[in-house]
Length: 182
Image (cartoon, rainbow, N blue to C red; front, side, top):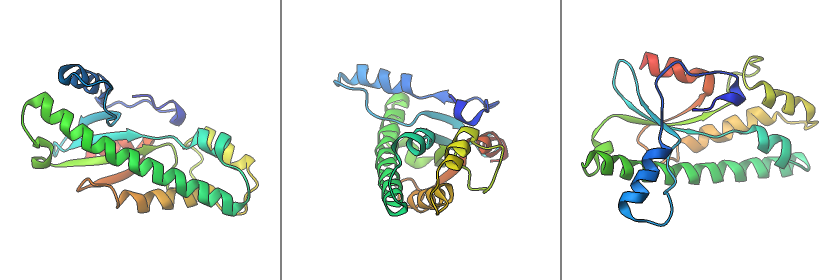
């Protein structure tokens, strides 16, 4: 999985899920590959399935966010809603693809699993080592409100709306530790 916008490379075994979604498309004879999470892995000690969806804020902050503070808040809220819908759909599709792969209906519902929203935007504010490009973009803006903090808080609220029984918002540098500790 690409963590280039975090300047970190995972040391854990993380499986790119795209080939499985593509194989599902072929086997089912459907026109398009269904949207699914970016990656999956199993935690080390508790053997929890992690479904990982990585979304970046860097391009959005630097190339799409504009206008007054009120405009920027609305744009961030709209993007959070979009990400939430996308991740919810990807979660449902991923469960179906996994069930198909292991030939066991609703298998994901019977095992411990967590849906992870992974991003370069850290809740530890300020964290000078996280998402360097994002921080530079934020510093270049002249908004009177804290864009990164506002976005982080909006995403934290959104995580509670996801259909998974357990969801987490993680900074990409926290992923390895999360996998190793759980």
